[in-house]
Amino acid sequence: EDRMEYLTLVRRAIDRGESFSTTVRIDHPERGEIAVRIIGQPEHLPDGSTLVHKFATDVTDMFRKEQELRAAKDAAEGLGRRLSLAASAGDIGFWEYHPFTGQLRWDDGMFALCGIDRADYRGGVEDWADAVHPDDVGHASAQLAEAIEQRQPLSTRFRIVRPDGVMRHLVGRAIPVPLGDDLAMLGVNWDVT
Image 1 (cartoon, one colour):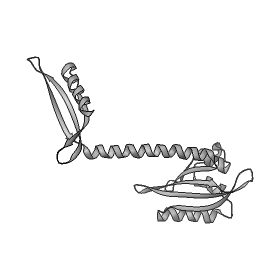
Image 2: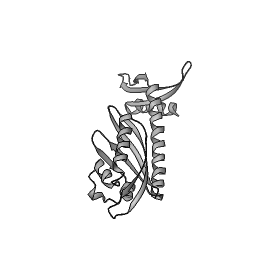
Image 3: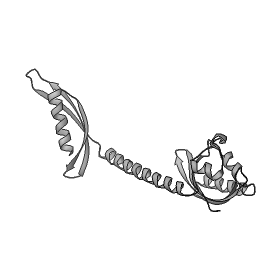
Image 4: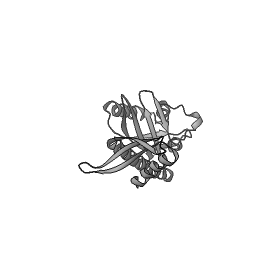
């Protein structure tokens, strides 16, 4: 397949004078399958023939990393679809907290769990703290702070009081995700009332 695409590009370079760039997989006798990036530039000679100048470089490592990244992205998208389905089927909300900036992002499930209107949301951890039952906010905040400081997963239970006065019992799980010197906590809460 790669060979046919390459030959088609070479033919276009000769027939139409088109430059090309492509990556082909080649069976190397010592290294097995490798990936080679080929750039071609046609030159029309005075005798009417065409010479195609080609530059080739081994891009096997980059090619493999791109394949791994594509596979991870596909897996993440599949997981995202499954999580969305799970969230729509139950009282589940997903969140992302950036402790160094104080930014907290909620999905629709979190707004529904906490009974908070999106228009009233300030986008910070204070939104969560305001929803947590006054008797639980200290303990739950300390658990979150410890998980951030230790860069460890979080597992917690706490109560919330919705604006309509209804109290709900939630379970929360989160994992730390390093972002260079920064950190994000990615979490999920669900209602176990």
